[in-house]
Amino acid sequence: MGTPIFAVPILKSLYQNGYPVSVVYSQPPKKSSRGMKTQKSPVHLMAETLNIEARTPDVLKGNSIEESFLKNLDADLAIVVAYGKLLPESFLNLTKKGFINIHASILPSWRGAAPIQRAIINLDKKTGISVMKINNKLDSGPVCNKYEIEIKKQDNSETISEKLSLIASEKILDEIDDIIDGKANFIEQEHDKATYANKIEKTEGKINWNIKAEEILGLINGLFPSPGAWFTFKGERYKILKAEVGNSKGEPGIVLGENLEIGCKEGSLKIIEIQREGKKVQKIGEFLLGSRIKKGSNLNNV
Image (tube, rainbow, N blue to C red):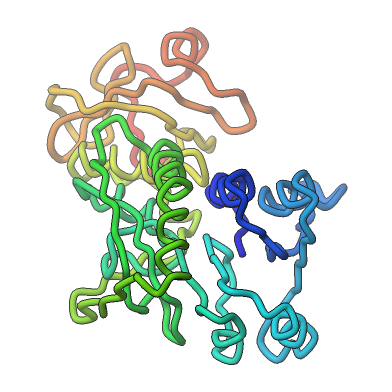
């Protein structure tokens, strides 16, 4: 059970290593941004490539058809990876060994929808994946294993997602074997230490220059590639895709140099890649050739 590209390597790994995947569940196809046609999820498309049945119910709660289907399937185990739907409690006993979730954080930190983004925005030094048994509460089930990685300064949501997905695709094989053989040791989480990774809202991407440069960089990296961190200038929106912390000092939100270095509460931010609304992504040198943003420009809510 999975939906985004993050879950695809895990499905491929199971298939390529001979695990008999009976069925794949994914979110229903969605209309594209222009509404011209529907788009299947990355997991749905991979299931079709591997010739595995794909089911995409709109809802699971109260869905007697899907409940009956899973019951009759008599599966050993269900693997859930960023599926995007809460599983009804009535479903959780429909496989012999339960439902196992691969969650992209070091639980109990960052339970919820956006663990990778929240860890980066929060300037965490590390993240990882947790292999847990699903219960009737959000990401609060007992954990059998955690695998940690360092979050480096140049990492963003895309690079961390790729790293964690690769680790999960390798480790899940041993995890499944241990669970099926009854060797897995599930340990209760420390619930009093739980933090929550709420779904990302587009409005969160608006840059407040009156905070530390490293915090703004965390926002840029955490929201890359979508929805992105942005500011407005003379009625147009600009999305910053890549940046680095500089050493210059100046008023927050004021452009300090010809190379689009911007003052922050502490330090400065050097922009490396930027995208003007409705235009292509540009390296800073190319962008500055025709830009109205010059040294001394004020980027505070203008």
